[in-house]
Length: 446
Image (cartoon, rainbow, N blue to C red; front, side, top):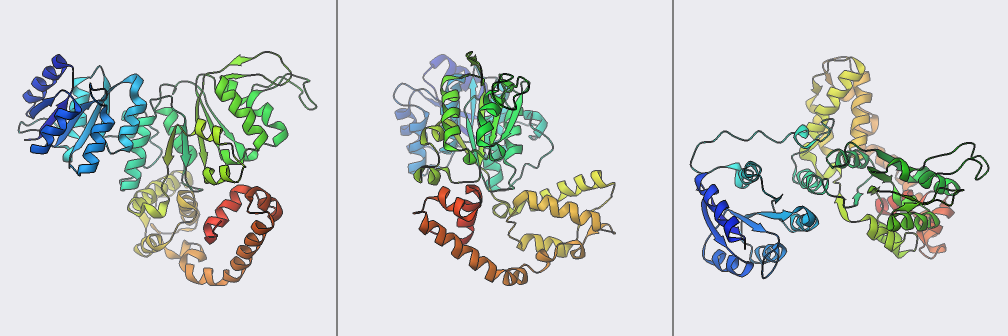
């Protein structure tokens, strides 16, 4: 029999929960504040802690902090009002298993309790709750939800932050699917029926950034042949996704910050301000904190964008999910190419496991598609793989001299530029994003 401790200062509500959960076969105790809860937990073992976010002495984060410090092994579900969802997100980052908003729907609470500690119920026999699927949460089914710890953590964070209006900064390497995750957050939000507008910040010329973001009036500058709605106006009521936000020039960052702070925009060539209501999601593969240090990214803009940071794991860090991704892309290839492939050979599977996947999921998808085109049998074999994958060590040896030359060029450019990465990138004739990737690749220390 699972033991649950209810931490709730509303006595009537606590009694109601206690009675209802007891009827479902659980052993229930209650406490009215954090101090009482800690006292009870010192002498008894509970499988689940069901705690209110706001309590007379402390809030739910204090109880979670105590649980973490003492190493108390339990699952925690936080009860919170909708206005305090941001605090619930904080609790999740501290290790809470889940959260539920008030007023509480009994069956929804029961489902969350069942998902704790292996999903077992009390002694009575009840029908199992159906497993989570993308459609249940309004998620896009065209994507793999991995089962590795890293993937589970990421998707749990998405589930928590999506219903809020908190700005999200998605950080991950190139090819990890950051834009897809931004769409996923939008589709799981209350804005899902409103516009989703994506802007590639790395592709906007500095001189046209104001027009792209805020729009312009016909004739306001050379080439303005008609009125244009900017991305902010197009996304009004919905979600604006800023991809590779680290590539924005400093001047454009100033304009963007003002629009975000004031929630108003002024199209170029007009004196009229337009109020906008948008949810911001930004993505980057750069370390923006380093960009702040070298003066190329505004710290105040960073904090505006980073309401919640979503870390996207690299494919090499979730090898447990590799098989699921392969199956998914094989299915896609079959549909796109009119093939009937059953999978990959054991030799290919072994190569995939050993490979480091520098291009992440995008690279895997491209390799599956390319190999599927070449495949003549039921399975993708090693014959269809790129040469670099068949013998990655050999390929690396051939390019070792070239890589060492590139590394030394980067070190020299950084020295000349006084370690200013923006200036070093200009000297090397590459963009700042590429420079950051190369610095990371070669392990060049600042």
